[in-house]
Amino acid sequence: MHYFGNCLGGGHVITPTKHDKPSIVKHMISIDWKLWKPYMKKGATVSMTIRFLERIAALREMFKAKEGNYFSELSPAVLTSDIDLPVIEKEEIKIEVDYKMITDERVNEAKNPVSSNLTRLDDAADEFYDVPEPSDDEHSDLAWASNASPEVGCMESYHTKLTTANIVKKLQDLTVQKKGYMDLQEMARDQECVSFFYGATLQKDKSFGIPCSWAAADPSSFLIRADSYLADQEKPKKVLRIFMVKAKSTLLQMVAADWLRSDRREDDLASRPGGIVQRYASQGRAEFFFIINIQVPGATTYNLALYYMLTSPLEETPLLERFVNGDDSFRNSRFKLIPYISKGSWIVKQSVGKKACLVGQALEVHYFQGRNYLELGIDVGSSTVARGVVSLVLGYLNNLVIEMAFLIQGNTPEELPEFLLGTCRLNHLDVSKSIQTDSVRIS
Image 1 (tube, rainbow, N blue to C red):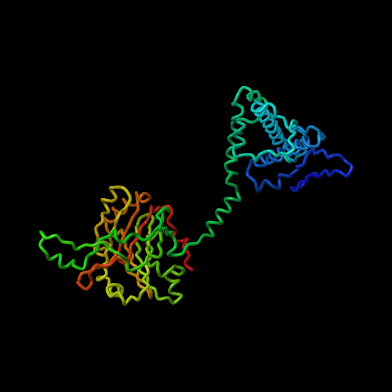
Image 2 (image 1 turned 90 degrees about the vertical axis):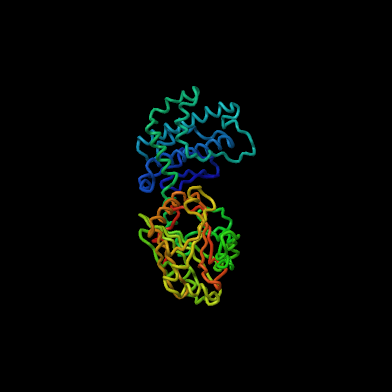
């Protein structure tokens, strides 16, 4: 190293000539903090200056060890004498540097009396000596050192201006600096840059390992009417009747889910631009979507929207086609939900149960139909009983794994056996992770 420079305004550079001995660095830093203070937290000027001075001291000691004692002893008073700081801040820096140097020296001597002095270093492998980066607790170390031991306690004379109030203030300043002004700015920018699309606000996780996620549930967890259901119903009660069987598959494929919050009820999500349904429609694709939008009212309304897709033509499934094109009365008399709490509190399991129910007979359902979709808006708040059950579920939501199946009830031999439209498994939903509808991209 042939010269030292300072790129932060007003630095003094002393460059040795060809025949000169290594230059004596009396000071490297002369910063006009007035220009920097608007961008820095209060108290940062002192902290940064101390760090610079520690590095200068390390450079001095390195040259003393490697090239001989060409440097005059630079006391903290000399180092801080020409720095453009108020007198009070200079005194505080001087005290802190004095105290830190002496404390570190005493601690090092106590740990290793032989190698405590830098001038004794003769290891040829050491190319450079530098002080470690100051930790987040560098100021708290000062407070600890004054009470650590009688040996270190003798340094209290250097701690006259570092009162308890000053130390607390410095710790508070350090806590604020730890986040940093620029870090907070980047966090704000990142949040602004994040955009959500309808159908993509709740993540998918087939492994069931990620909280607040969705996946398709196992169809065999749910019982449906068998093809002999009607015949079995007519048999005497004494005869063993097997008219319910486990489902083997689903007609529709679950492709997306939304977990939203709003200050009002959100209807007809499928029609909103930018969502998964409208993307398919804009591409002229033939897939048909069946959306179940469960609406939980309150001071904040939560919407759980489940998106199912049919890849085959609708005409190939007569019962579903009749349901899509039928009137609301027919739909309310046929659409069924089978709930199941697979993991969670016993009281929640007992409250929810696992019995299939005709949703349209118990709750208000609003139907919204488009060219390639049918959406069911299920208003949980339309029933006092349902509202109470859902309120209980919301209280335990973080600890629950909720499974559901949806189907159209078969009432005639031609409509049996029943088939599941789709299933879902909701893994540890969290209301705090629901997405505000204002943040969802609709253009």
